[in-house]
Image (cartoon, rainbow, N blue to C red; front, top):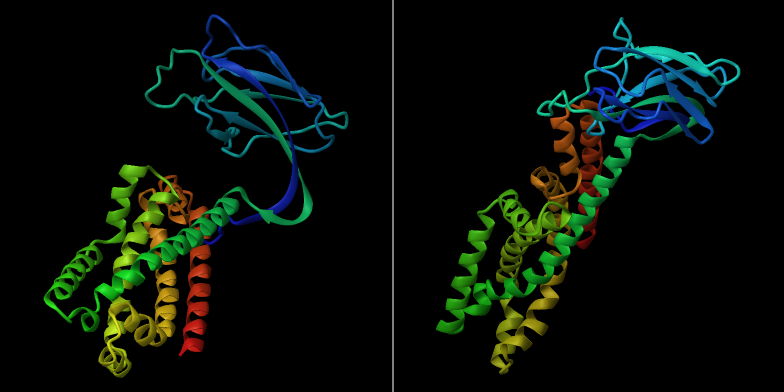
Length: 341
């Protein structure tokens, strides 16, 4: 946790690989493989777990140590270790040739019959520094997740605002109490808003994941629905708190409902509406992290995967990224609201 996996020293990489069958079957793998002028040969094309094999290679970078890495049948990679439980490094001579013996690991996943022949791979990998730093693999996922989180929150806020504005006028008592019909509309809309607001966006996200599948789209819809209810409630309270003078004057002159809203209400509500909208975007950025935990996309989706894999360096990097984004959003939101007031 104290060493977040976000950046790494820049380096160039070189590798060769070869397939083998574990355990042996009717058709063993070829004992040699060449890629990009790098050739690996094995002492046997098939083997059993615990056997000792010899790998020979050519075409590698001269005088640069290499590492043995194993790929399991399901695509997982892990470095081979020596008897002291240290990563297995092998020497490459001045001609780019290498040779090493290793013990075949047990990489067959649980639930798979160990007697069935499985294709596995041995990699010989080299790296050398180029100077400077670059995003690590997990760091790139963090950036991608944060981008999705902010974009998801922005889209949810935009969509929610478009629906919340007209709904808020129907939920404002001072605009809807003129006759029994409009009053009934007010009570109905207000009740629906309270019901939706009482349901956490996390629960709404679970429902949308069932209908539209995993991904940012489900998270965006969940946040948008909750945003409509939350903003419509805030907007309606702003409308109810405006100066009634212009409204009464326009009603006295015979203006209809739309004219009263356009010329008597809108000029008074634009600044607070803008402030509440920006504040809601700030809230949605934080909420989208939680929504991602149930498959709603964004950084939360990556975060739950890293927690399940116990990759705490990646978890630390995501926490730091979330903190930075939330602080930046809070600062921008506060400055904009300050200017509006």
